[in-house]
Amino acid sequence: MDFDVIIIGGGMGGLSCAAFLVSSGLKTLILEKRRTLGGCCTSFIKKGFTFDWSVQSIGECHKDGIIGRILSKLEVFDDIKFIPVEPARLYHFPDFTFEQSSHLDIHIENLCQLFPKEKKSIKKVYYYFQEIYKEIINMGNKKNLKEFRFNKLFPYCYQYHSTTLKAFLDSIIYDNRLKSLISARSSYVLLPPEEASLIGMAALEMSYFSGGTFVVKGKVEDLPLLIAKGIRNKGGEIWLKSKAEKVIVENNQVKGVIVNNQFISSKVVVIAKDVLTALLKLVGEKKFPLRYIKRLKNMIPSLSYFITYLGIEGNIPFTSSNQEFFSSYNLKKEYDNIKKGVFDPNASFYLMAPSLLNQSHAPSGYSTVCLSYKAPYQILHGWEKSKRYILADHLIKKAKKVIPNIEKRIKVKWISTPKTIFKITGGTMGAAYGWAQIPRQAGINRLGNTTPIENLYICGHWSRPGGGLAAVAHSGELTYKAIINSSL
Image (cartoon, rainbow, N blue to C red; front, side, top):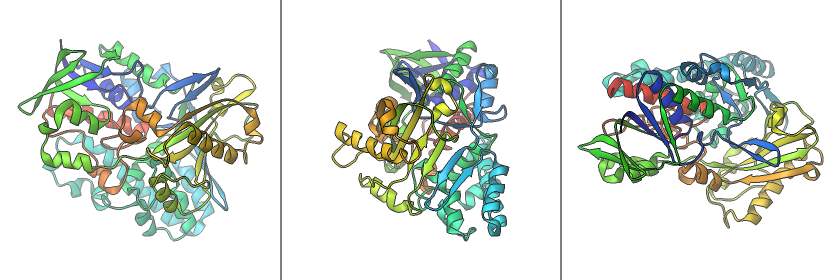
């Protein structure tokens, strides 16, 4: 049995890559060890309440966006509906609340009205964000980044490759409240502005502003399942409950994969899962140059999430489905405590109310709420049940400020920790976004989609451009382009 490409991992990275490959007529196989596809992009049901497990909003769902283009290539774009999220998010700071639009021009105008003296600086910041994002996406059009002068073709990524978001904003913005507001989404990549890469943050911001922000009508897992349907319709194969056991490499070239004690020949293999574990265990450390292995082992995974899912009686007394609450402007201190495994009761938190947009998520007269903290893989005294419920109660008490009597209205409660994410994805330390988006691991400094082994590729949030669903989908496309340019 021979394939042009075997993809190990059926998350959104692997599915996105396969979508482009099968649309180009290549014989493609996806191997997924679990019985379901989508990785973090899955859903579950508890006592009549539907919860999207991890992905709460998606960018680039319009026809020209990466999600839209994948669906169009597979001829299934009209088989799914997206619900616009507007405003995209409410940010609650100690002394003001800001409503962030999902449309860039409206967002910039709102910032300029709030901070009129910084109007030129605000426009300058988002101009740089857009240019950086364009460069990152266009990197995949080059056969080999080493063959040309990087600083000439990608001047912004070259200039800012080692710059943090805070350092960049400090050079342009004067008002500290405005800096905090523009950098608020750095909490999404689970880093304070002092540590978050400007390149990584610009890509993340623009992926949400490119065409607006959406949720899938129904369940978020409908998206990967529809992509899988389109892949099969175009002749691609997907094997569930099929764990890759070994990637066969001879003379520094991929030959195929052993799965279920059977050798499957392939011209190309794509690792679309936890890169560190997969490369070391499936391929073997000795197959790679020492420098590459040292780089892998020195990379730092992102933090993760502690999430409490609630099904509650009654309606939600507000209209924004996605909110974040900051008790302080000093996020650095909060992150320092998180890395030590210590939780501050005043830590910032997320509140999402998915049933406001997706009424099918809750029975009539009920609502769904998701509350979350940023979290490390290990905490002091471990993730035993008592600790989980203490943290869940902390979140519920915080939510009580905006959802009256929420603790008395709970009908369903389910808790997810970083260890849950590890169990589902197999990702190192339950990392929510692959490698942390610090400067030395972002942009051109992030692992590329190629490897030192001929015809062995990687995609997903462990490779370029980074974490987040749209970025992971872009990674699938970048890997596809690398394959087409170099291997097939």
